Image 1 (cartoon, rainbow, N blue to C red):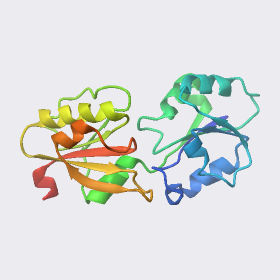
Image 2: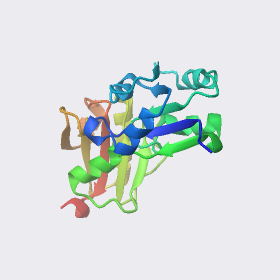
Image 3: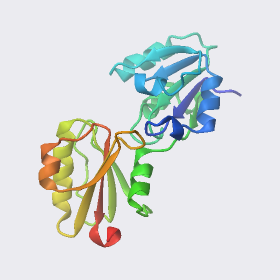
Image 4: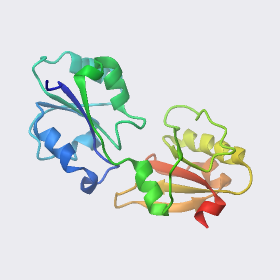
Length: 208
């Protein structure tokens, strides 16, 4: 049976990173739901659009109020399984009502830019709260940053790792403004980075 809601991973930002499967899923939708930035990735789709303006739960309630016969595509940046609206959508509507289309995550791109094997890597989010992790003993971590405060939390995480670790700020991945640079504690505490940043923390021996 066809599922009413399709949660679609749209990649880290560039149209080139939107998969053919994601475009095909959007083409079959009656309603597209997501941030303005995600919606802009599908100019060819003529479906009705519901724009998220910060209140994700209110947006999902608007989806719940739609005609049950409408096919809904919920667009999420990156991959639906990493710090996304997809988790809230599944919680709200149930797994039985949701199909998930995977996408390229910004963490994947960050590791690729660094040429770093990420088997066993720990993926953390600092979007809305301090990461619940000590860092010490981990070989590789990728932390999804958000507002300026998040970089202070990431600095604390790096400091807690002890000696022998390096950190890289991967900003605006796949976009024209992309920048990847090695950073230290002082730079992280200043927090002068794009809100679309992944910070990779790895043992020095892995990136030498």
